[in-house]
Image (cartoon, helix red, strand yellow):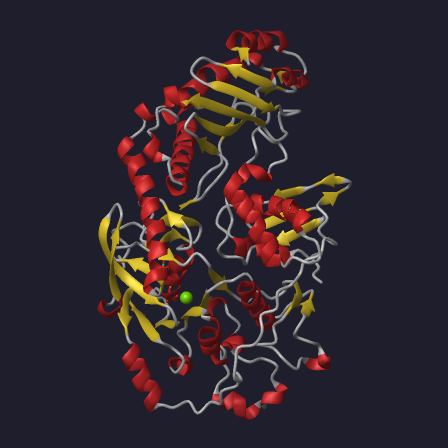
Length: 570
Ligand code: ADP
Ligand code: MG
């Protein structure tokens, strides 16, 4: 490890030289209060910025062990420190110091969810921030004095403001960790109580706007209150007793007039697979971790999926046991989305009429009379939803304002009325009794088979023009070699660093694809290795700045495989 003076004199030496001279500062330095690892130096001021790690020994950082003993607490602390670091950059960094990215300091930004990510590492020995920096340039000349300012003034300030326990708000750190722990506990409690989701009283479900995931202002929002019949109480390890709506397993309908808050409730339930930061409004909304939002997605590719539980007798005898298409329709895409989720082991499906194909959801008695069964390839979801639960133990939560045909199948019905949740099951059942639909059951005796597919290496080519090219182009688009994977309809993908991780997981897991393992096994083994060794595992740069990753769920990883147009299975 080199000294601070060494870095200083190297910078002096390269002042005014061509930008490439910056390569000389690569290496590790002892800057007294922290260690600086300059792992990768950018080639020019416009290229992707220089990657460095700032490591503060615990002797100085001083974080008490109890804050990071368990995985869930450590994740929360790392998340908290990442947010603090981002805030400190905002306050401290001067930013523009010349051409291109000159003067920028960057740490992976966090969303409202608390995710395991590579941006910060806390161990018993040190705290380490993995950041990027645009080394200053005038035109393409080194601005070493500005760089020295960043290394010797800004970085120490950032360390002081964001990486030392004594300068941080210990109350907030504690709340962050305990909140994360409570949500994890609550999720475990669901399983034990036969629930699939919990929506805490006083939660703020609506968001600021379609473009913002921040909570709606408290003055405007109607806080959530559980209907009495569904209210449960949970004793959390940190927050103590909390009450809220427990949605039991089985078939749950969310009904109500348009604009009364149905989709907002479902979206919160959907996001409840993740933990949220304090103040988000959804930090008491927790859902089974294997819940999958199902929607129609016409135009997507489908690779040999058994959609026969839902679709049969397509025109021209196109088979549906191993159904493939380059462009699925609304109903076939929705069927494929369900079957793929079941293949990965989901036990809770979430559907919203707003994003479903009508002909996939319902087929009423009049249509049954006009279009005979043998002319209709689709077995609507209404005829399979009970089988899903009875045969496979898979629950469904369904938002539906347009058809009462589901009253017969529902185990319970929740009505949203001016943003208030009411329990209306017995009323719905009475109505179902009073107005019999007379529609014929078309779902057969059982749900049907879930066929596990075996992925092939062929087509998983991460190269473009001879080079490995995997990158996230925003949250919902993944570049994989020459292919662009469209993830815009994968609604539970929440962070661009998850997208980035998914791309590298697809690449990393290729060595597990042997023509025998199923897709589910390949992904599970990979996630298991990540759990043991951390997300750094995905990076080709061992022991260095790994890049920005956040942990994705297996459903979103599978979704990317399934949407890669060159993906093939046995
Ligand atoms: P629906 O699906 O029943 O048509 P939405 O869930 O889309 O209704 O909600 C309609 C509008 O009401 C949205 O703009 C949403 O932000 C707002 N909204 C939803 N829930 C609440 C609430 N609890 N308090 C205030 N506004 C809400
Ligand atoms: Mg809606």
